[in-house]
Image (cartoon, rainbow, N blue to C red; front, side, top):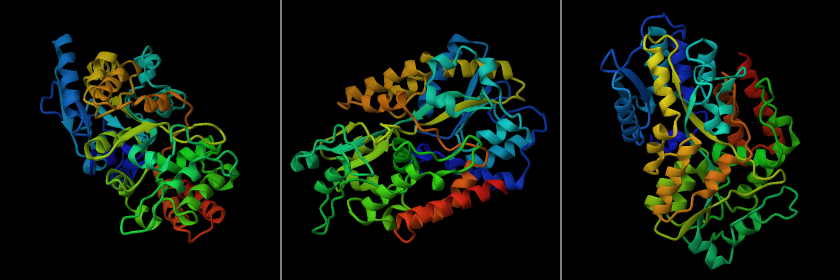
Length: 432
């Protein structure tokens, strides 16, 4: 799995974690944590090899400032990360510090696996991206130090928009059609004649890049406060889906669901091949576009809706093993990773967007040096957001809803009917 796919899936981890949990208990046996090469070293586990060099650079600086503490970086590939996690918790071999995403942290928090970061580093949250802090707060307590964040924007093929006379800099969508500029732009940018169709926009069943943002920007809700699903009963959420499904099936300004339902990279590839004019996506695809695009392009804000520009942000946090015999040292490593100096290397190569706000300048500066203005991403990260799917069984619910929502996007099930069916299936799944 490529690095962009690893980070963009808000719920990607729990599908595998669920398999692991079915085979072993998450109860910790209380034995010493570990996982690194040196039993006396603090081990930091991550899954992304693209940021591993940046972590090594950061932690080398930590060791210089703290000569009594050695830190190892352990890379566990995404493909096995979520199976290994519950096994390590059950076997007492959990590392001292490790990455988690929003898919799985709740079940481990409830089991007492992680250190309460809000208590251990009370000064930290003021310097961390607020949306990520909120994402990883459970029962009023913060359980991780924000590391990376994804923000959503609109990639624009300026060669295509210029030729069509389309200004994409501040697009608006509206399910009633009033003041809508997104759909007219997508129509003007779509070409279906010839062997190489050109799509105007990438409407698709993509939680993070597309439909969750449309729900938020229409003032809709996906879940209630108790984590139950409400999207099928919420008229504004249904309106958002109807708009997107119509773009695919009625307007045909976006690729078919047959192409995108099971291939999350289809639209990205069409954009980088010059066959899509407007590509809504996140910081996780910035380097892909920069490396592959052989045309003029830029980043602008994602379209705004009736409720404004309300986008989802996805974070990754570092957590500390509450049972580690090196707990105090692990907390100091967390404190470092949550500081400007500790997080700056993550953005300095342009591969990741730091969730430590003071370190985000390094990301901005890198891409400015490459001739790319990424301010729309920073604005999205600091702006209004819709909370990511939450709850210990969030992935279970999403998995139950997904096949039905795929049928909705394929045009085989009416939107309102399908969303109600998907909601009911999701709620039944999380009750089991």
